[in-house]
Length: 596
View 1: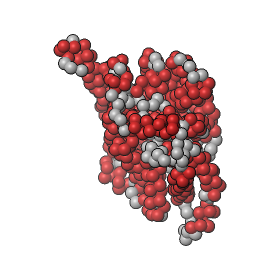
View 2: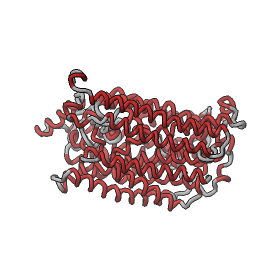
View 3: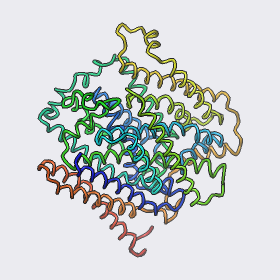
């Protein structure tokens, strides 16, 4: 990387920390800090929803899978889109209309106080593991680009994430709008430059030159394994993304149920655009960089550097730093969001419920910030552990962890949204049983076991064994958890009247649209403020990118820089115009503004 790329990255880090500091002024109450006051605009929530799904793992572990399997990787995005389709039609509005600040408050309303504490604490270690995996992923990428010490990168990035969360709380998620524009711009540039490369030769040349198995999946796996993997992955994504555990947390920020649906549509559109565009450089890397192990001998899995290799080949001075900034943006958004969610759960579902029920709003914010610091340290410890795992695929590790731990957690909190006549212990007991089976499966599902049970004529490849392990784990855990949850209905008895009334209100609220003006009052609406602030941030960052035109680059490179800068500055200008119109409308005398 050139000195220009280092300056670009340094500016982004300062810009990101400044954004968090700016949003601090909005955090006056616990609701403000932990969920942005529940008044974010739909497009802000949609950008945040997309950014939390599109992290650095996409450019490392995901890129490695695309490098190895080509179009097979699009299966994951397809499953996400189908899952979001279910969210749009069924659960998005329900999640927002629960009228909660944290997702665990929804668990309490549905399943009672005991389940509130169980689901507060048991999933926390898994969140730390996944946070460590995310931190490790982005550190691996940064190491491949800079050549810096991996330990130093882990600590610096963890500090950046922690400081961002401490400053802005949930309002940092609003910055996802600028970050999404940055990622969209640079990934489009990467895709275009890839297809223009003489060794690639456009879409036709790419399809002709990639390995045959990238288009014909049966060349690297038996068809029945592919079908089993696809079906179980789809069910896994559907259940997880629409459960109280991992669905509700994405919509508590928004104004109402309609905004929740619109945000979901934006996320679907984002996946449809970003997924194929993002995948082009990773797949084309097999043409320009067929031996990544020789280029990146220091990486545990050299294929995870496929995107880095293409960036080093294609991007001129300044743009490489912009790409790294975009990847850092995605990572920080995802990790900051998770840290804020866990801090909110600790404060709202443990501290003020068990330790100090009369805690003031400001005390809740202070306790949440203290928790964030401890959480950040634990994530660093976990990331340090991942760097010692040799030859581990981040893609397979992520999916296996999701199947082993998330399914037992999410199944009862998905079914509980639709099935009412279950005893209170149905939720926590389903999770415990699922985790026990998950532990047993880790010892049972080995290569000798699959060979003994299935007796293949041709031995399973390493790829087949990995996908078979994930698929069987998912299928068994879904079957066990669903069977146990429905089985508890046999023990359902007449509920305690007070709890029955609370559950009835919970289901009634999910079906009752929110009237922001009635439920939150006139101070609740910050539409103009959001347009104005985010518009200003986009203009500032776009203006900085315009300065990169001064770098002595070829004309093509300057046109790419001009496109990225105009994308941000143009969108920011549009936001400012909308804010001005909203301010003008709100400042009109009541007699001229019409009835309200």
